Length: 348
Image 1 (spheres, one colour):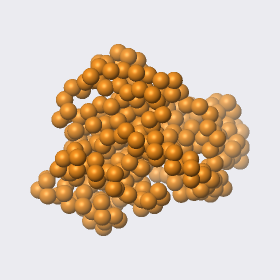
Image 2: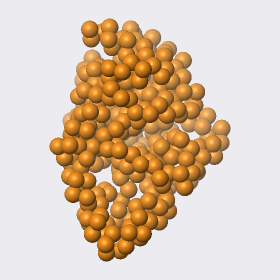
Image 3: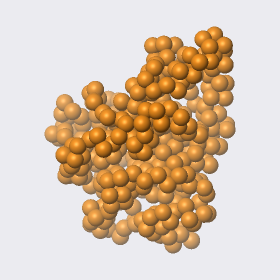
């Protein structure tokens, strides 16, 4: 299943009531108190990547209406005493946390191979990086998790959440077919409240490196020349042979973020994204309003989380949390400070 706040679809699917309706634009699901939508297809979207301000106010307002018209909240007893109280808090909330994590080292990172969309798992070091990332975000609220369709990103998200002090259980949502949806039903509302939906989306995949995938980076540079390989890797709009440029990767990643993830933040949900160097660079380009010239020099380390605060319609970068014991890391906003204090009160 893919979670979303988009309600352009005409119907809902409620497992407990055995109601399933599907529209041409997607499948909308309300499971317990979590509202979700599966995109059936992604159309080609014209998106201005150099400045978020390129979108008109009417576009943004319409998207907020779609996101909040029939959405319900993920209830966390740490921050609320009742469903009603939580819904009221969400409506008034002007803050939400966004955590971005590039996956830990993969087996092909270790071998210095072009990986792209080849599905390669983490190394032992990558596992350790994911666990360390989890420690850094262990006091930051997480209501929903988005990952790419690739195992290295999914492993990173799952391992990171084993370190979270709230101890909610990530549950990967499946929408491969009717049987997958039916067989993965959860029939306990209490269990759903102690779970975090995990949505996998190919749109968040690493950019596809085409004919370079599986090749050694150093050997490729020797074959084609350092300048040509650097151009393929770091230019904005020049793709490798039969592959994607950063611009092409950004078109799908940013469109998905705007349509499915940003509405969750607008409704007050705290979101973690575990993805890849280029898909995250694309999203950061959108969040920080970078130009195509600025984004090509942006480097992201594996396994290092980056924190943004979504407040009053703007994204404010807060850098990377250093450690769960550093109180100052979580004092960026009143909401995060209060969440950490309630965790301390509940767990001590």
